[in-house]
Length: 441
Image 1 (spheres, rainbow, N blue to C red):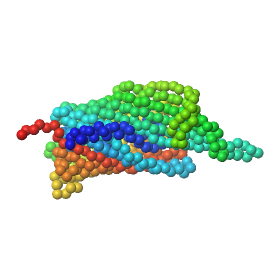
Image 2: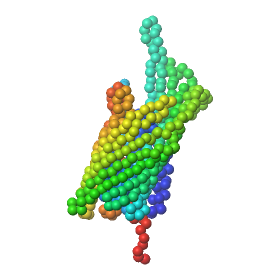
Image 3: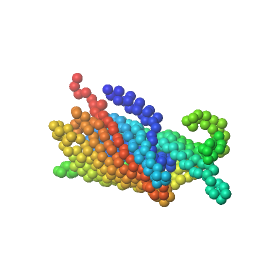
Image 4: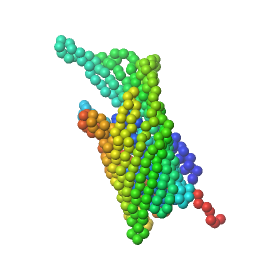
């Protein structure tokens, strides 16, 4: 059975890399819609993780690798996300809906010793999947009367996924202090295409050739996340206080951006195969600031094996990225999160729902995009449950994870786009003590 789990883990990683993920029109900017961190446990609690040390022995924290002092079992997590986005803009009173289901996380974690724990994880970090056509009418003056002469179309199309593979190690210094380090490898290709066409007033193209400007970002990037945590437990009251912090730094390697301005025709009805292409301009640039400095600070308070509440502040320095031959600057991002969990009574085996872990949370994020003076902000509320398998106990908490996130992004001001979303998540956590020695024959 354990060999089957390992083979499944590797196979799922292949499909995660190949899948297509849809997202919002705001993905046209930069590296697309950032999906990380997509773990159900974190997302169901509003995103809190920096000061979250699980009370249970089966949960590994990748966001702050220091927070794994209680982790004792080998754990395999498989998770999927269903995104439902509802868009609206005052421009022509346009409405649209997009849905997407994809594998959002696979992770394998295990203890190396009572003080040293290790985890491996694979997730989509960001993605681009959009296709937007902007049509503009052109007029000419005939007898001093504006008369329709044709149309211009400006098509924006994007695709690609940026994935991240991680290896995290935590070390417990003493009863209260712990540190951790996570190595992050980002890889993938992101494509943006801008096509210009002109049509007569009868809708017939004025020219057979299309003028297209394509940008391809090839990304292979390393950085590191350093984490630390302090937790104190009052043994008389079973109350815990936790403080944690992380910093992501040390970008290495680079992103190579290739530009191509050309004319061509499509040889198929789906407009996917180019033919008779003539290159007008080509160039290539590279940058090293794709994933800039990030930091997080969190505090938490709770009762051992019963409840926990935490608040967290995240900061991400604004990056700049090339897009259609121009450099775009993104503003600093701030995110405020609050959330926690509640377990009624883990010893009550007569009532199944008293052994269910209930999670809750909320967040507000000032986004890195600022368009026409409007910051594209995001806020939402979340919740979830961990339904333990029938044989699960407090020392071997395996089960079915369910989560939901409801929120809003963007604005209707200046004909921008308002995005309402409902994200559903489902996953499994299989935890057991795989490598214990046999004491008796």
